[in-house]
Length: 313
Picture: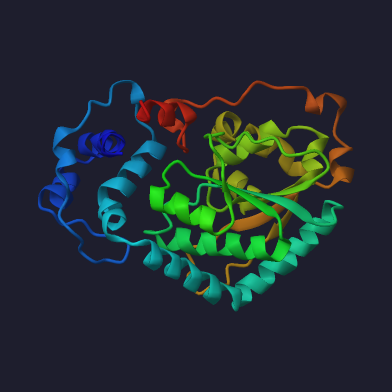
């Protein structure tokens, strides 16, 4: 709704006043393709006070997406959006990268001792009708759906109405609520968590929700755990990625070579699995229930359920 967009743009207005003025007030809003679109609508002039919503890098990211790409949503039609996704899917399907992903995925299924992937859970694709990276990541999701015949569940709070409509038309199911990654998988059914370039906190939440021997049925397609650990300070890992840090010694990580022609779409990704032999070797108190992960508002790297609820008022 325009009210929701106005609240989000308020963040940009406060944080990047000059930048917003240059793009919105002068009516020059550039999309991801570098083309100038229509002038900004009037709703940015009646911005709603931010109040209790707080500031976060995740909200700031969404604000940028809306402020500088909202015109794309206004002018793109369903046929064009669908055609772009199908074209990306066809291009990806004949790539060396996709062939290598299938090979690694097959290996990962054998490591978790599963016969097949029955469910794919996807978070954080982003605005794929506007963003090229998100479009190719969706294309890969659809190819994996086709290859595995698994049921696919998708959620991203930044999806537009058009994007939600297309997700359904592609045979995927939209999750109704923002679970913040805290989705408990079905027992004894292999689930692929497809989280390309999602934040470490979202992955951390998913691990917390499935903490225990049930992780043996999880396959995570997302940012490399080893790179997360190697590139972050220990203090940050302890506060924002404790479950990633703790489970890493019992993880089998299969690197994904970044061989696609666009090098910023599938970079730094890996498939992580948790073989039952490794999980069974942990100390007795390793699986003791722990508190629900909590993060400081200023450090939160994903869009929280609280924020979504506030914006829907």
